[in-house]
Image (cartoon, rainbow, N blue to C red; front, side, top):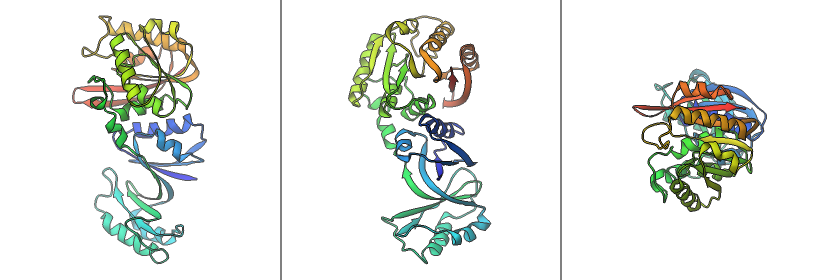
Length: 330
């Protein structure tokens, strides 16, 4: 089956990486057929319900039916056969391409062609045909919409225990997905803080292990997890003592302290990261992944002393702060 992923556009590369990481984590063989700005087309036997449950940086998954230049769109639409039932056509632009094309006119043109054999229903159609304008026109039949409202509801200010130093839930979920964790596997966050990463891991079915050097953060993390109906193994620990409290884990996803606004208990941040990477190399299972947010290239180089660096995605948090979402493999 050929599927069209409509990516969110929140980052030039991270949404694509998240889709592929989820597909790989779930063990689906796949092939990339086409790519464009905001578009990823995959050939594979995918479980869309599971991908919908996991993904944070995509908007829709469609059954891909064809791609065409604007000049050939009408001809391709005339060849399109859709299942029996009512239908509607909803076109949209993605990115900066094809802005001279009018989506309403495209909807009308495709709708008139398909309406010769099927009945239009704009309110509750059986089939939604979705022309998406990027570098070309990509046409799909809607399979599922990624529900993204829950991520906003889980933002730090809406949790019982609050700290402003917390990834947005969508980015936390993307980080968890980059770790390739699977349902019922053990996911470790050794700098768990208020629990944002653990919350997202728990919601996709991972078994959670979290630690922090501050007891009040462990207590607050527990409160936040319970608020969302999530359980975890939590304990107070310095990063160097993690192995005293838990055995090997299947994946690590973490956002360590990175500056003056977060506590390192007066330890030099370079020393903290060096100790952390050494511990990660001992506790992570072979051929598994560490997804970690790092301040700059110096710390990425530090990680390469222990792991194989697979991916780096610089993410601008605000005007003066860029964080690097990195994926390492043991």
